[in-house]
Length: 185
Image 1 (cartoon, rainbow, N blue to C red):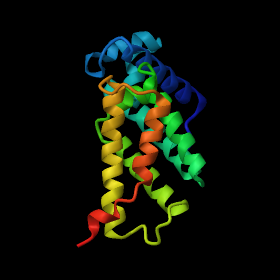
Image 2 (cartoon, one colour; image 1 turned 90 degrees about the horizontal axis):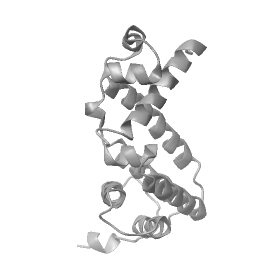
Image 3 (cartoon, rainbow, N blue to C red; image 1 turned 180 degrees about the horizontal axis):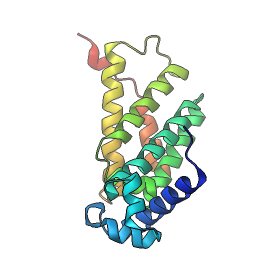
Image 4 (cartoon, rainbow, N blue to C red; image 1 turned 45 degrees about the vertical axis):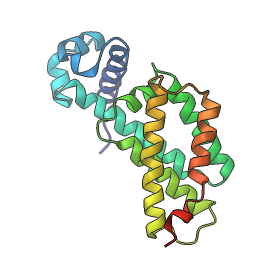
């Protein structure tokens, strides 16, 4: 069922206000009263849709993950994958931006899962691999997803000094490397 326009506007105001507050303080420090004041809505209205500011955060994150997945589903070539990774790295570098924030505070590991889907999509569309459901694919896909997530997180936190272009190139090399020698008996 589609939300009416008033509900959509109210939720958008809460989301925008939460993102603004997140630039000033951590999520667990934001109160319902503070969020409502910033959004210029009353608390009763807030409680009609959410219980906590973290619920607003989760809804924003869900939308972000859906958008990222839609972009991944559109990847058909190596150039598409490189462009996606470069955009992702540029978005991660923007510490005040939504991707950078979620990368640093990914409570449900949703973004590692998105990176795993990037690997699977790429493997299906342009890697020279015949069976994307074999043990090799599962292990390497998990390695790429988890490793890439934590590399991006370290980079977003300033522990790795590279440009977005260098990071995207590194991630692409990790994604397209042949790890099959590890599976030889």
